[in-house]
Image (cartoon, rainbow, N blue to C red; front, side, top):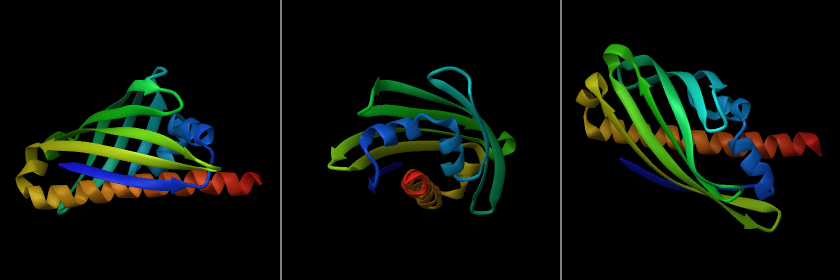
Length: 152
């Protein structure tokens, strides 16, 4: 499953880059995130509660930042285990492009699931994954733009 998208964020690239690396901002934006803690400069641990179709599960996972080219791009990848629900893993390449006082955030995400989740059918999984990715980046946009407005 692949998802591509773009968000125009009303903030300079440095501000967007800082937010992309801030566990508190990420925690606010990851759908169903219950905890998110930094383990190292490039590793985080998380607990996320997600409902896909009839299955709701808590996933304990790890997130890794790689291919870091500050403040322009990185790859954020994660893997989570949800007990009997199965597992999920995915990655997103994120690129930030300056556009005056705004930033264009482009992403290409890939995800795969296994276990009970995979038995629900690829159309349901693809739809849910696309919705979760779009929700994350829309919430991220709102969080960054909202914090800029509050600081003004």
